[in-house]
Image (tube, rainbow, N blue to C red):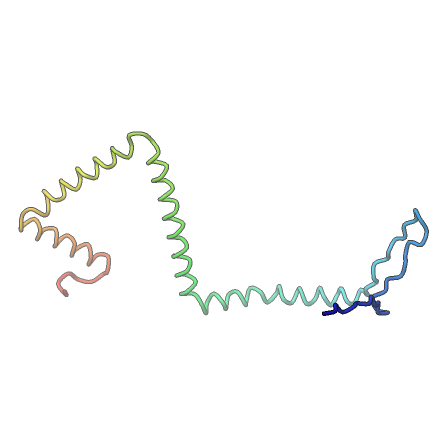
Length: 145
């Protein structure tokens, strides 16, 4: 197989005139001249856009208020969880803090079981406290179960 031969061609549009035709001389290129009217036109367009931008943002927020608030809450909770995990990791690196927290957790769990879960009367008391708390959070009466 023969490889095709490529001939270098230059179109007339792509030829660049030789600006520096003498060694050691530098010719300054002049920027293209734009009329003042064109800059005024650009300024008016930008001013018009910036003038209507608050209306656009307000309409967008009013139209998508619920999803924006939901996304904000999700992002805020993710940041809060990351900060909490970083604090717990930092506390876990301190000697004797992790075992102390474990002992406190075991002690509290034992007290909770002894206080609320061993007898039927205390379990009913715990159930009534949970129902009361749930009605306070939700806003309903506890008698409507």
